[in-house]
Image: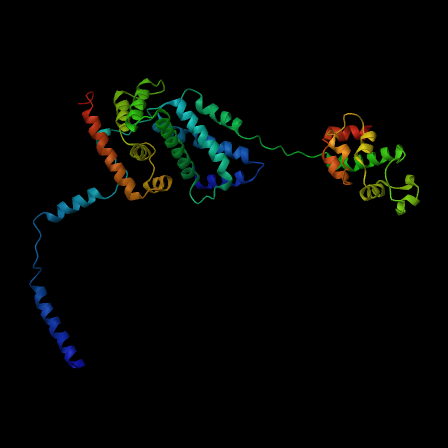
Length: 186
Length: 193
């Protein structure tokens, strides 16, 4: 979304008469990128749907306090990221599963999910990504798939640009290694 | 050391330095060093377009898919969960209230004003009630306490005065507070009676 459009939407949000319509426009504009951002974290569509709804509901609750110090996109991504990670943490606590077990479940979900397109190699790439720790996976997805700049990611994740670059670099190396180890590829 | 000596020393150094310069740089870099260094440095320079590892091939399109129609339906599903926008209501009270006040006053007058406790010394009591305008009557009502049980007698059945406790305690003399209890249909029916 262009900055001026974003500013106009925020003005409309401030007006009680136009708030609902303006928020609906925000939902329409951001639902897709946020959905896929979340989906890559939680994998299953049903879970992504829940998290996406929670994201927008939270945005609705706090949008009056949004001071536009960051862009709306950054703000929404931050909420979506926190909601997705909270969802994973809740699963871990609920099922007392270790990180690795959860990621195994996610890989299984990847194989079983009906809403998966792409050929075998793309699915294996996703499986390799799932072997990464959550934060590293997040950084990789945001850089590789979402094409976000490091400066944007730094704002969203509240990490330094240097830390993000290092994290991405390590993620790339690990994924290359996992793919090479994959018997389907080698 | 005086200034002339300093100046001489500087001149002497310059000449020396000039001589050394002609001899060239004493340090030598290995052959091909700078070409190699340049290549390494340029390779390390952050180029965000080239950052993706080539082993992933062409950046893929989205592997994940949403069910058909999901994005068309999602906004509506979400908006239904939000608190309903408070409709901007135009209160009929602003139109009916003065008329309702007049109607209430007319009712009270019609029932003869009986049972309402008035201070004998009130100046309005010395005049005929029928001569008073609605505004004047309102002023009278504002000044006096109207007991709830008397109002109950005057109001039609099923009126807004519900709780028994209202009967036991005298009501405020603020009629507006009473009318705040009424919704628009109650006000309308009051006006039409």
